[in-house]
Every structure is written in structure tokens, then in C-alpha cells.
Image (cartoon, rainbow, N blue to C red; front, side):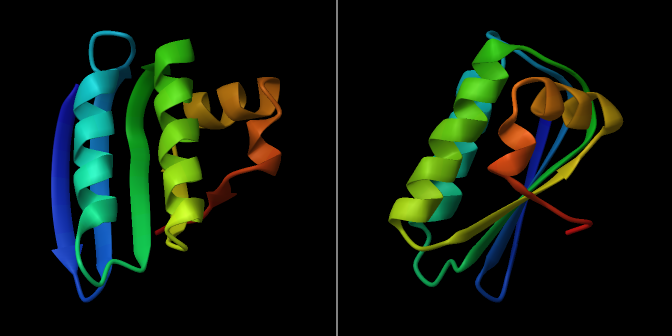
Length: 102
């Protein structure tokens, strides 16, 4: 998995590509927690448009970051790939996450 983080005027964007699985979930967790801890952060976009595979570890990190964002009153939005959309629908998490084009 490749992770790229950008910041701009109160918003952070984490772009991922490749597989979001047990081997790479820690990297997303670390990047997401750092982004949510940034002073003045009001929005976090997880750009998952390049994610080709996601397993339960990846889903777990998404839920963890979503819960942390809610706790900190930071808007979290996903820009998902078709595969991620499919997994979110199968797990009923499409009702929980805000998805947009970022």
C-alpha cells in the first residue's frame, strides 16, 4: 500500500493505493491519527479511490478513525473505489460513512 498525506487550510487528505489489509492497516492508523491531531483540522478525507482490496483489518481502521473524528468533531469523508463501496455495502457501513468526491 502507498500512503500520501496532504494538508490544506484545516483539511487533511490521505490518499491510499493498493491493498488495505492486516499488513498495511497500521500505516493508515498512524497517518489518520496524526492528521486528526493536527491543530485546526476540521475535515479529513480518506481517498480510497486507489484501493483494490480491503479486509476486516482495513475496515476496523476506518471505523476507528471515524469514531475518533466524531469524538473530536472533525468531519471525515471517504472517496472510495468501487471495491471499497462494495465492502461498505456488504457490511452496512455505507450507512455510517459519508462518501464524496473529496
